[in-house]
Length: 101
Image (cartoon, rainbow, N blue to C red; front, top):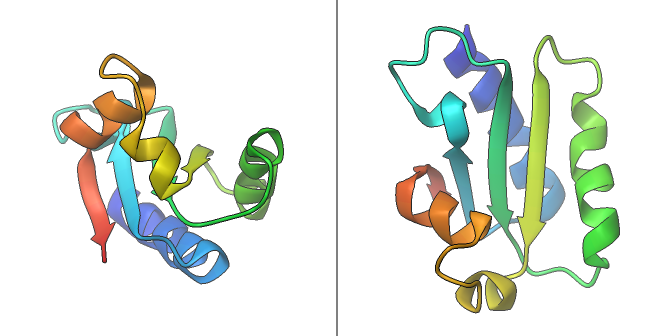
């Protein structure tokens, strides 16, 4: 069930954002986690949308999902320049790659 939901999330994000990368992170990326409360996704995509609006736009299609879907959207430039201890850098280092172009 969880993998099907994740696949649906990836399909929606892929169509909406045309991302370079999609990374699953947090407890949902841990295969030993019994039942994660949410799905945490990092999207790396070129966009001109201001960062404060990206999350709301990216998460809107998942409002009716049976689990909460948290989506962070960063541009390739922002991801490259992320501080080593930042959430973005940690997700890229330890997360599960779902899409890489």
